[in-house]
Structure formats: structure tokens, C-alpha cells
Length: 291
Image 1 (cartoon, rainbow, N blue to C red):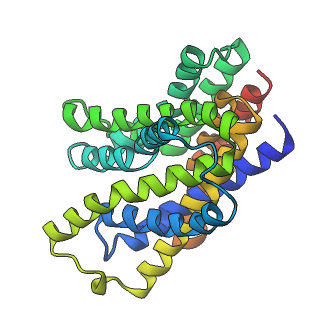
Image 2: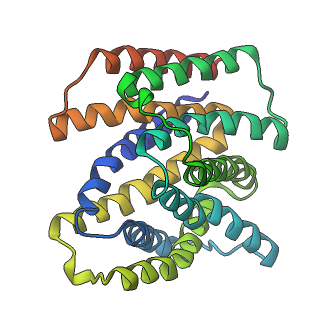
């Protein structure tokens, strides 16, 4: 993997790791789907000047626009909406365990849809990284897994498959149109589709933007600029430089990074599980890169 792609992925993963803390701050006064709507709107505003000034509409005919719209659904509104709905019916422990299947989904979909080879080293690397994430989660999280929340579990798994499709088809479109153009259109279209969803949630819950605290606005601004704008752009830059399988496995670095950020910002304890799990994740990513 080129050094540029590796740095882009590590930066994106770090920003997404911080996003979990920022999201917790935002959710104290803002409903979840409205948080997603606002962060995407802020991100879209970051891309609009480039679309206007740099000819971002070139090579975007109706067919391309339809493809970008579907891609935006898989990566933004439909993905977030399905995930949020699933969390209402299943446990957080179940959802966190299911997220470990994300890079595996990307591995399989990229082989079927893009013809990327699943080598022995890639497969072992992904499994080692999965083991690392499970170690970071700890026995308490794993032991609280419950069968029976079928509706919620299926919705969460569906959202993970959508992210896999988003990565795989995003790789294909990035090769054709470039990372900046694809990311800009996906974000703008995603923001447009989230507006009615966020508005409906706000109306149902009686939420007003005036109820948003200053800390929540700061957290949402960070989510929009750093996570939905910069991190997503870096993710697509890496997709343009490497295989989607190798890009996807970097998602496993997010849980250990999140635990470190939580320890520094929220005062949570850095455990032996975190140290051992992080080592396994790094080893798994390194193996997959060289697969």
C-alpha cells in the first residue's frame, strides 16, 4: 500500500474514533438522526464551493447522477437510518459485535464485484484483526450478546452490508471520477436525502434547534468538517490508491483508537485488553496490506 494511502487511512480512522466521543456530546441535546442531518449539511457546505468553482459537474450526466445517488444512500441516509433503527431493537453489545463483520463484508463483496483476490495472507490478516477488536471489547461485552433481537440484529447487519457496498462501488467510481468529485457528490446528495428524515424526527420529538447547547454545536461542527468531510475524503483517496480489501481492514483500527481517545478525554481506564487487542489489530492490518 502506498504511504500516502496509509497516512490517509490512519488519519480518517483517528477522526472517526474521535467522532464517537463527539457524537455522545451532541446526543445530549440533539436527536440522533438530526445529528446525522446537521453533520452532513455542514460537510456538504464544505464541498459546495469546490463544486461551483472547480467544475465538479463535469462528466456527471443523469446516469452518473443516479449511480452517485445510490452510492450516497448506501453510505449516508439509508445506512445511518437503518443502523439507528436497528439500535432501537437490539442491544449496543450486539451491534458492536456485528460491526466486526464490516471489513469481512468488504473482503467478500470486493472479490465478487471487483474481482479482487482473497489471498491466504489477507484472510489471516482480517481474522487476526477481528480477534484484536474482540479482545478490545472484552469479555463483558461479548458475554452480553443476546439472540432473539432478530429485527434489530438484521437491521444493523443490513447497515453493515450497505457500508460494504458503499466501499466497493465507491472504489469503482473513484477510479473513474476521482476521489474529490465522488466524495463531494455523495455528501451533497446524502445531505439532501437526510433533510426530510431529520425534520420528521425533530417534529415527532418536538425538538427545536434552539434547544441545542453550545457544546453540541461544537461537536456537530467537528463531525461535519473533520469526520463527514475530511475523513470521508481521505477514505476515498485511499480507495483510489489501493484495493478496497486493504482499505476496509483499516476500519479495525477504530475501536482501539476510540478506547484511547475515551481514556484521554473521558478518563476511562486503559486496560490490558486494549493493549493486547491493539497489537493484534496492527498485526492483522499489516498482514492484510501485504496479502
